[in-house]
Image (cartoon, rainbow, N blue to C red; front, side, top):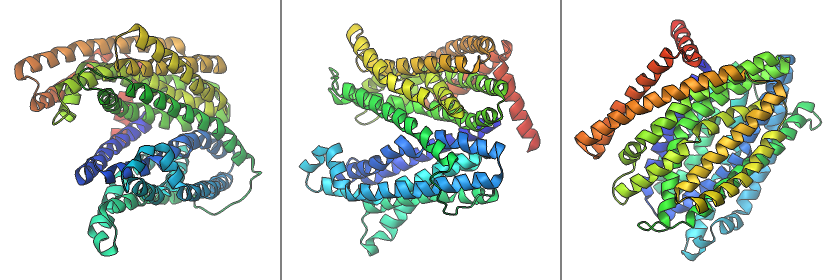
Length: 528
């Protein structure tokens, strides 16, 4: 719980610093040819990062590395870390070189329409070539994060993405606007170089902590090493699973682009869904990703030691904490969605109708939040058991579930763009349920009765919170209307008020996860 709390705060800082980065780019370049080219140039290496440089690598590396730390000497664990780092430098380095060479083909394949605008295709190619090395830097940073997490150090690696966000802006401004004019570097080129510098800062921020933990990089080559071969074996299915996630995103985007709203046309649904999903990603990252990051090293050590009872207890507690944090978040997003979206986005060409339609999409996205977050805990559990095929097969199967759900909901209901948000929630909940049932059978149970009891109490407490928040939201809206100031006041009153109501309800019903969280916070305060 304490480890997850550290990661939660760091993820929140990362989201805020990421927003600062986006606002800076929007203020500097607006909706321009340069900004479009930059976004595409960043998206190409970022897509490959999502496929195998972060999720797949961490899921495969941490369980094996944790096993070496628990059962072998520190020197053997350090050698494995050096073998993996050397392999990353060689293979991802070659991939980056290939990406730089074939950037014109990649850009032409992804956005053929750029060629219709003079100079846009060429600028996008230039941006891609500048930013492709970011992929290697972020892969090494992901490995460094895995090493530190396995050593029970969570604060430094969790803050690294914030250093990337802020470093990319600061270095980008320095290179592009301060030193750029004298060096012949344009502003947008400076921001592209800033991304590379931010990636280097993300890695460099973690190196002192690695040294203090006793890990220093030294090139090492041994392709027959059993630990390295096991990591490569686990990464293969993980890459396929991440590719399936990208396929689902592409399917949903394709369907969204085919929906035309009577008032806003074909562009409205895509924008509404994107804005709504960004709101859902905040609690997903702050709670789901944080708990998963803290859980994986623990269950990896339990699996390595053969202590399956501890493994089951950790999984059950982690799922309980996920439900404690995400179920009330879902209720809050449903009740306060319009106020949140209106306070952040409404203005200019984003009008009240856009706020309403985005709020509808957010309500349906929120239904699957607990499933999304819980799956992020369960997926690493299989990797800790050295089973990468099961989560891969479940993720690939989700593509079929996604297609069936989209076709069913769009034909049977009149939800329009909201049907795609509902489909996303259905896929998340079904994937979680399948993973949970398989894992329960694999490890002989996960303290299911206790988990079901606490989950029922959490659901009841969330419903009580929802009633209280709805009453407060309704009263403030009737009193002050729907101006931006009124919505900000609404959020300032209803969010903390809802949190207090939820906490009181959980204490009254004696939800065990609340007491566990309280004890963890008190112990941390006592040490400070």
